[in-house]
Image 1 (spheres, rainbow, N blue to C red):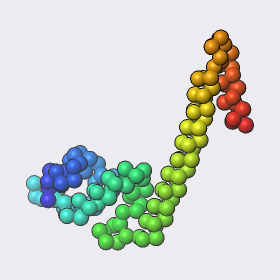
Image 2 (cartoon, helix red, strand yellow):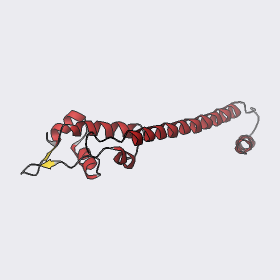
Image 3 (cartoon, rainbow, N blue to C red):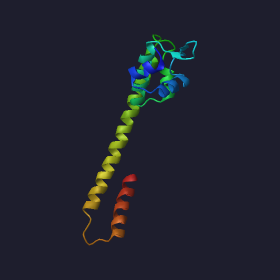
Image 4 (cartoon, one colour):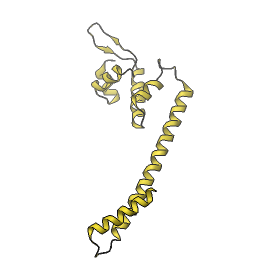
Length: 136
């Protein structure tokens, strides 16, 4: 199939497909005598895998390492290890985000409970003092 047909089937732009090819994520494609690329049906699967992997946080370098040289040459152990590593990264990010959210919620409570007669400078000092004490 040509690049236009592959683009329609995958929802990707031809320029994105060319980019993935030049980045080494798609197997080298055959060219017709007129210079047009001819993609195999496996290219659709590879593009779907690349797109999905990017959506869940894999970098192009990580994807390049995981993709098989041929359509059926998967390194099961390496793939499983990479997936586990990515889940660990996501869990770590979730923990950091939960901590940041808790700090922000605490700051919001501090600002909301500000005495009506306090000036802005004393309020800022009080909030900053609370933030700094939580960092220790």
